[in-house]
Amino acid sequence: MLNQQPERRKSTRVSSVVPLQYKKLKELSEGTIGAITRDVSEGGTMFIANEFLPLATRLVVELFLPAQPKPIKAISKVAWIRKMPGGDQYEIGNQFLEVGRSDKNELSNFIKKVEVATP
Image (cartoon, rainbow, N blue to C red; front, top):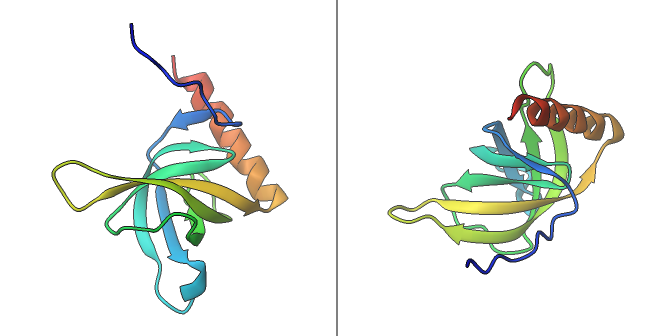
């Protein structure tokens, strides 16, 4: 029998590969860094990064959802990080702290569409 931990997330997450760009809130003058999500929820996302990001690092993220003319923008923090085996990439658990109302609605609609399409 597997010893599974209870789900701690407040939001439903869906597996989805979506382009994402981020930059550190303290380094806004620096360029954005591209990444790809593995899953998305209304509360955050998990993405693959080519750099280590310390816990609690504040990020400005932009999610490029399919069929949306503009990206979803959010301020977030790194909630967890895990080095991927066999390389220099990291899985980054990212918690949204601030998301505009219209962006939150777009994100919610996207998640509902993915849920319906996933058997």
